[in-house]
Image (tube, rainbow, N blue to C red; front, side, top):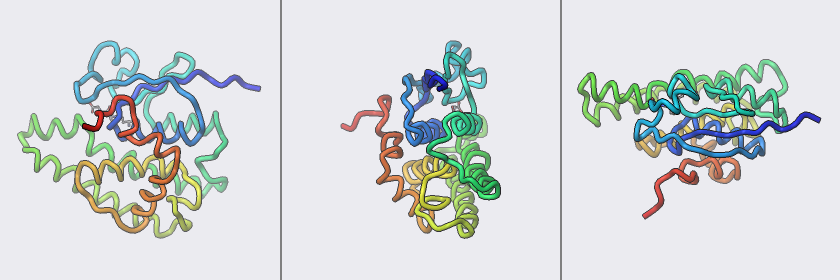
Length: 219
Ligand SMILES: N[C@@H](CCC(=O)N[C@@H](CS)C(=O)NCC(=O)O)C(=O)O
């Protein structure tokens, strides 16, 4: 029987990519040590963190002492090494569709709302907060419309691909949270149903940004 590797997550409560990785870890029922990199304070640029992830981005999953970076790669690693519960369907075409849904978020929506991209608009292009938020909101809404069109061809929910959460939901749910919380986007259709399913699911509750030890405490 293979030994379960020792897992240590370095994340930030509000980071969407950290959120997606926490969901997958919770869905797989894995235990992991925790530490945090304060993206709000710029700790991702500090030498000690850069030594762990030379890209200076959260999250990092340290597996038996080896740092894994880039959540699409880490999610695939998790699926390969801990295949149950499966976060991809058995059929190859269905797997491609689930990966495509995840990629709409990971490749097309999330990068445009990233801290460094928004900071560039604000600090180097001189845009004010309203313009910066409008930019992030614009590409979020655009991406959500694309997701809804793709989800019209998916099996019935409540999740993005049928009755159980998949890698698509790991990526979609954090983006829904960010859209509502930061940009006041109103959810509808399949995306609203996915958000509702996540609100009642223990893994998604445990992974929620406001449940994290480094989240601001309610006043
Ligand atoms: N493609 C990377 C993106 C990671 C990423 O952009 N992380 C954000 C937080 S959600 C970050 O660390 N941002 C810090 C910065 O932009 O300086 C992944 O999926 O892991």
